[in-house]
Length: 261
Image 1 (cartoon, rainbow, N blue to C red):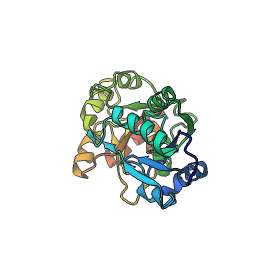
Image 2 (spheres, rainbow, N blue to C red):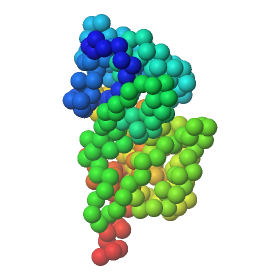
Image 3 (tube, helix red, strand yellow):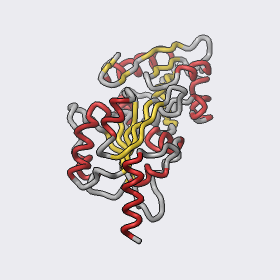
Image 4 (cartoon, helix red, strand yellow):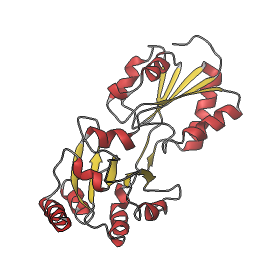
């Protein structure tokens, strides 16, 4: 715990869920915090690194259920830093990947706080990797997109329409509730048979995963009761993952290779 009352904010990425996937610098920040404001997607086991005197405050947001609105969280950061000193804002994944980290930095600096950033392991890359899904593979694609499924206004991101035209692997966060709309866009771009997966609670013991293709994925998600928090992965590299795709897709891939030969 930090005995200094100097107002300071440290934005710490907690990683995708497995508490072992936080960085050493993140652990050290938690250990020195006077106050920790933590999200729903940050594993609460990480609070074990706190000093016994540290104030631990849940400010979680998940799938439309907002315990605190963002402007209230911003005010809490400043108020607690001025009163207690070092505030750690513990956020799931990486605070700069759809985590509103820069909004919190701007607000804190406006009120004179020292701000430090500790990057986190983002679920967009790590969760597919843990299922052996590479986001890039020589000969298959040359890039990947990381997108939000839901914009600030609650609408579907228009960037998904652009990504669907690309050969890049698409990783879509916060998109499960709009899965049907997303898959329709990819189908309309001739990708109904493109491999696709949804991974819920990635990197944790509660992880659930379904793999199929764009045409079958929604049915698989419903059948297996997959929900938030989850990521959607769409692209040819999904077929390289540890879960075998359904037989329909396997037959398609086989017939396509035969045709090419």
